[in-house]
Image 1 (cartoon, helix red, strand yellow):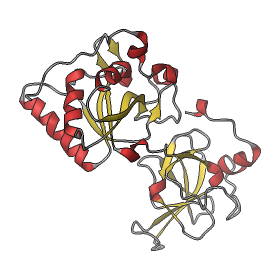
Image 2 (cartoon, helix red, strand yellow; image 1 turned 180 degrees about the vertical axis):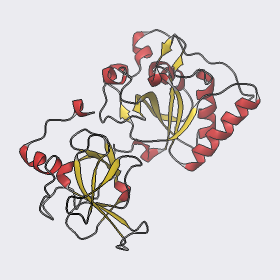
Image 3 (cartoon, one colour; image 1 turned 90 degrees about the vertical axis):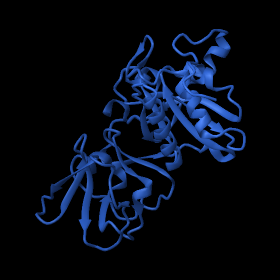
Length: 289
């Protein structure tokens, strides 16, 4: 992950490597209220969601919980406190305190701003509709076959489900970022419902092929449904179960949506611009009308 982060400056080294503490109320994130995610400044690993942040009045960013597995606890050199470090690179973050009764979880991660990088949540394009996110092989083909469904307001290819911010196509193709190629669809629920789009998606790709579609093989080509609310999750599980009862050994994952990173411009409406047709996607009827 460190390959994608700038080298530490001297002030950052003092805190992250030498475990010094920045002055209270001096960091740029202690009062930040924007939605997004906080990453390790040294290696870029995701550490905290903004939804876990709260104002403890201490002058440092405070979080009631970390992203599972992201933070490691160590006995502090003072013999009293508990130090917290990035579980991936060991960079110093701050200290964790329990029993203060400040949050329902009764835990406060007190973190130096300088140990963090804030990743803002992308602007939500769904203000005019609902969002569906599907991954099922090369996003060129999924976009091409889904774009003409009724009620679609916007469709775009991109990357989701990984750990590296602002991934490029070349990085995703290395199989090291964790991302899937996907399409984000904004649709008008008054014209088409989520289940109709989902069933269409399950017909335009092969939901029984793991980590690939046709000749395209790799984890970025996995079959995955990224739900944006619990109703979508329930619908996805029900539709998958329906296909399994029909005899299809479905391998499609159902995962909560995370940050969606739009793909480079040349990927958008690729087949439409090229005047060709997908080579690994076609519609196969799997549901009754």
